[in-house]
Structure formats: structure tokens, C-alpha cells
Image 1 (cartoon, rainbow, N blue to C red):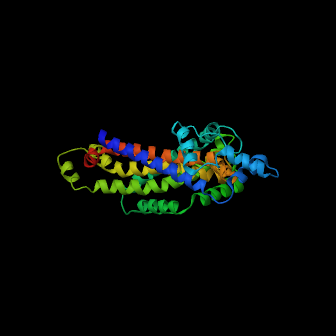
Image 2: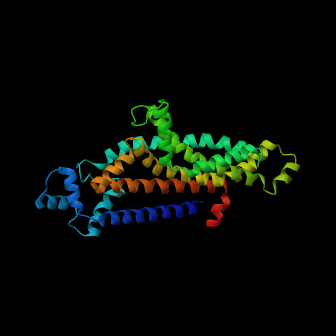
Image 3: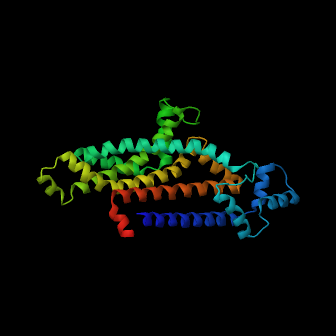
Length: 312
């Protein structure tokens, strides 16, 4: 188990290193004069060549690619994202302020998705192929086919414009988070419902279960000790992926609903070509992905120790 976790940790290092190099290279080679764009966003006035050259030197654009990369990577290892190229303020306080809006929204969406999908999938498996089962599959397929941005606009049109029950924009109160969280949660529910349903049906069809029941083991014990662990592995895997992808989905949903957070933070940074801000969001997203995947691997190795043995 320890050897398997060590191998997973090594993969995390490789993925993060590759992400850092690729992100920096793409931004470094972006079309246009980066120094001029930053100077325009910073001063908002007619610029001279002296001002542009000063910005180029300050940001480090007058050095080679690898010199600039190592100068950026050193502080990054300590989670120091440096200073904004536009405002001159440290990146981390502004990034943290955006995180405090985005992460709770993503977790709320995950909670709504799980609270919706789990009972729906369990009810659907009571009678496989029945009316409720077909209805649950149809709803899940429809939810998976609807893009988050379109679903968000539909919810705004219905609950904010037509009915006037909920606010459409902003983040002043908890009520403002209802529509964005539901938008994220319904997308998660669609994926989880299908996976949980399929996992339960597959676990119930295992050939050793009739022999266990003939020994007089109670149905609740069979479900707890045999069906649930077998069905949990794919569910845990997809649950971890959904948690990671929710961060990306929350960024898009925040832009639709006009909420502050990583979405607004990233769009503003891209528009202004604010190098450190864009890099901070990309690296943070990659970090969340690899940490969630690492925890997911550890959890399902704990559920089924044979997976760790095969890797060893």
C-alpha cells in the first residue's frame, strides 16, 4: 500500500511539473505584445516606448524563457504566485478571495448532485427495466446532454425572470447561490445517477451472491458487506472526478450568474493578459485535480486491497 501511494505521489509531481511548464510556455508564446497589453491595462492611457520597455523589464519579458520560468517556479513551489502584472498587488490575497466564492459553490453543487442521484438510483434499481428505472435513466441522460451554461440560462429565465422567486446575478446572500448551485448539482446528478445505478445492478448480479444467501445471511448484511463494497469503487472514482470537474464548471457558471470567484478572476486576467493571475488559476486547478485523483486512488485501494497488490 505504501509503495502504491509513493507511486501515485510521483505521478502527482510529474503532472504538476508538466502543467507548470506547459502553462508558462503557452502564455509566454501568446500572440501580441504582452508588455504593451499589460501597460494598457495598467495605465489606461497613451503609451510611449519607454513605458512599454519599463513594463517589459519589470515583468521579466526581456529575459530568456528558461530564466523567466525558473524565476517564476521557485516562489511557486512555496505557493507564492508573485504579484499582479497589472495592479502590482500580491496574487495570493486576490486569489484566496476568489476561492472563498468558488469552492463553497462547487461543494454545494456536489451535495445537491449526491442528494439527488443516490435516492433516484436506489429507487431505479428496485425494479430494473420498470417504469421508474426507465424514467430515471431518461432524466439522467437528458441532464447529461444539457450544457451547464444553457441550463443556467433556462433557470434564470424561469425562476428569476418569469417567476421572480430567486435573484439571477450577484453573490450578496446565500439566496444568490441557489441557482448556480442547482445548475452545477443537476449536471453532477445526471452522471452519478447512471453510475450508481449501473454499479448497484452489476454488484447484485455477482455469481457468488446466491451461495451467500443460501447460507442464511440476511439481505441487509449481503447488501452491506458484499454489494456496497463492490458497487463503491466505480462510484468513488466518478465522484472524485466530478469533484474536480466541478471547479471547472463553477468557473463557467460564475460568469453566467455574474458572481465573483475564480471565473471572474480568470476572465479579467485573460483580458488584461495578467500573467501571474492566469498562471495561478491554472496551477491551482491542476493541483485540485491531482490531489482529488490521488485521494480517490487511495480510497478505492482501501476498499479493494487487491488493486494495490496488483500495482505492487
